[in-house]
Image (cartoon, rainbow, N blue to C red; front, side):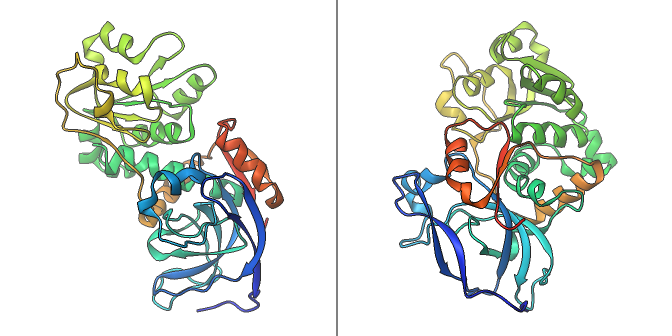
Length: 340
C-alpha cells in the first residue's frame, strides 16, 4: 500500500569515508522497498549514537560491501508505503531502531522493516519519540531479556512480582539515558532492591525513577560499597560504563549472579582475586525488536515518562550534532529534525 505524491529525489546525508567522521549532504533518489518486509518511512527526526561513525571500521563483518553509508539508526516518522501483509499502514506514526547494516535515517525517507517497527508512544512528540528507541531497548533487554527480572511484573502479574521482589539489581551509570530507563523498568517490575550508581543532581532523579539505594561514585567505588556490608551483594548488574566501574562490579555481584555490560566484556576485567562463578557474565548488544518497543510505548504512555534530551538541531546542523555526540559532550540525546 502506498501514499501518493512521493518525491523522486530526497536530501540525504552520507559518511563518504568510513575512516572519517565527516558527513556530506547530497541529493539522492527516493529509496525503493525491495523486500517483503520493507516499509518506506517519511522521517520526522533522527538521533546520533555514540561511536556510530566508527562501526564499519571496528566491526567490518556486520556491514555488506558497497553499502549506502547513511548514518542514523534510530528515528520516528510516518509510514509512506507498506507491504499488504504488514500490520503498519500508510499514515501510521512509528518509532524504531534500524539494524546497523542498513542505510540509516539521516535522510528524508528511509526503509524500515516489520520486525523493527512499533507505533510511537502517543504521549511523546516527534522529538521525544526519536530519542527513545535505542536507550529503552538497551535497558529493557538488559533488565528483562538478557537479565533475570520478569517483565510481566510491570503489568502487575502477581507471580512475576513475587519472583522479582526477591532480586536485588544494580545499575551503573544510572544518570545516563540507558541507566535511567533501566532503573525505571526494574522498579516498575517490582525488583526487591534497585541500586543506582550515580552522583550529583542525578541522585534525586534516580530516586524519583525508583532507586531504593544509591552509590555516589564521587564518594566511594562499587568495590568499597560492597565490602562495607556483604548483604549488599546483588543478583543482577547492568553496567553502562565499562572500565574500572565494570571491574568493580565483580565485588558486588552474588555467586551465581548475572553481570551484564553494554560497554565491554566483564570476564576481561575480572580481578584476579575474585573466585566467584556467575550464571552469566557477558557484553550484549541490543536487538532491534519492534515487539519490545510496543511494550515500551505502552509503559511510557501509562506512566507519562520522557527521555533525556540534550538538544534539538535543524537538519542542516547534522555535522555539529554528530561531533557533539562523538566528543561525549551531550547529556542525553541530541535530536536532528528532518521534517518537523
